[in-house]
Image 1 (cartoon, rainbow, N blue to C red):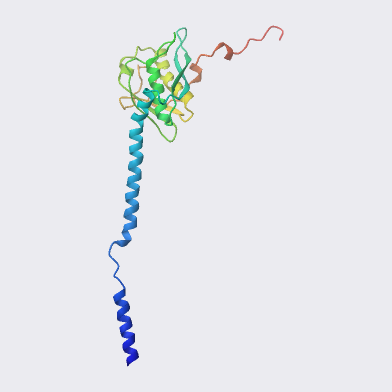
Image 2 (image 1 turned 90 degrees about the vertical axis):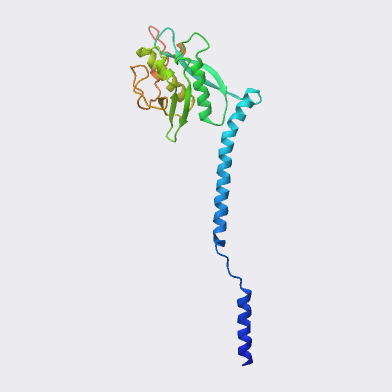
Length: 219
C-alpha cells in the first residue's frame, strides 16, 4: 500500500514539473526568418536606390573618376555609313548605368566633323537589359518628331544606337527601340523597328587599314 502511494505521489510531482507548451511557440522561428528576409530585401533596395545619387555626386566632385573607353557610331559626311568615334565614360559596376551614359553621349553628338544621328532634344526615358540579352531603349517622342527624315538618315539613326550598344557591351545581343514606352513601326517612315534588331556591321565604314589590299601586278 505504501509503495503504491509513493508511485502515485511521484507521478503527480512529475506532472506538476511539466510546463504546458505555449501555443504558437513553433511559429516563432518562421516569423523571425520572414522578418529577416524583409530586412535584407529592404536593405538591398535601399542600397540600390541610394547608391546611384551618391555615386553621381562623388563622380561630379571628382572623387570617383575611373573611366572606360567606348566606341560610338556617328554618320559619315561623305557617305551613307557609320564612322567610329572613341570616347570615355565613367566605369561602373552596373552595365545598364554605363549603357545609359553611352546613349547620353550619342545624343550629345560627335566632337569632330561627323554627323549627329539623334535629334539633340531626344531624351532617354528608360533602359533595361533582360536575361536574354535584349536591351529595351525607351526614347522620348523627339526621336521621331524631330527626325530630319530620309531612308539613309533613319537607318543611320537606328544602327548608331544598335551598333554602339552591341559593340560595347557583350551582354547586349539585340536592341528594341521604344518611343514613350511603346513599340512603333518606324521612326521616320522607312525602316521597321517593331522588333528587336541585331548589329549591322555592313553599315560601319572601314578604315583604309581594314580595306582589302589590292594585289600588285605580277604578284
